[in-house]
Image 1: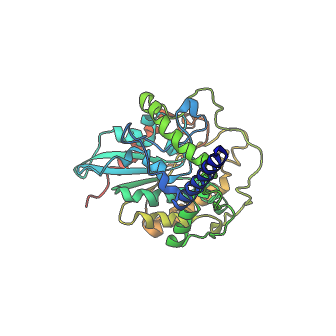
Image 2: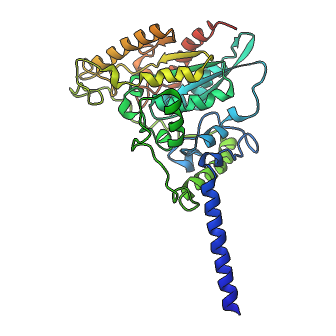
Image 3: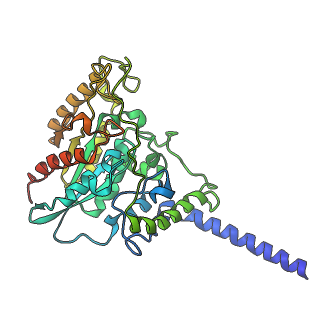
Length: 369
């Protein structure tokens, strides 16, 4: 009798396990990210979750865009009537590596108390580490549903090479979303590109998704510690300063001087960003970068850029923005070299103050509807 009983329990347990697996497979992966304790039990985050040391930063990196937005304070209800809503998208310099939320570009603009078109300026940090125009487009295309009045988009040449557009982990692990973007904006990529991760049936099962599901759970739990401390990354002054001495290599992503080939740059993705914004104004910013005075600085401005490539790209940007009529400010050399931290594009709090002040001047010139 007991043998039959245990056999039935085992069979029922196995059947339940199979049903759960089939149910998980049937649910779109992104849908699981909409379930969030942020903006309910504790406040939404001021920037997207990202981190490599969760136990100290109370933060971690995930690939679920739905969960990223659900954890953000932007997801807290509808847009107030008196709010002039500004989104700042971009890379780690926008997100704020080594900066507290209030020290970032978005944080400082938000704290300025500006009044635009009879409304109070409210600025949201939608930056995300990794440098890729396609990653920015993915965020922008999703964020437009939150009804911004202005989008500020800092960019730099390193975000443009076609060979790196799909390698950002957040892009590579959202193949379904990329399929939609490729189709909607006629992007110059193939859906069959091996860089795009396409989950198998097994990957979408309960077992296959156990790591992703665990990360979603951990993100909720870290929200308790984050809301209590305000800490969302590991802050340290013990970092290696941005490189200022270089060798004689003058190539850029395998491209040799003297000519930078525009066809190898993702200007089509940049244009798609303006299409995604629709009638929402976009302020395109060539973000400040470190200009080295060290060894072979006559060859390279910094770790990222040989001078010949960057100078040609700046001219391309000037030509393109003039041709398209895009609002654009070129701030490449606006910040002194001593106001950069561990990268040629990461600023100190004082550097961010200078940048925020300059961009605030342009915001004040916005034409009201």
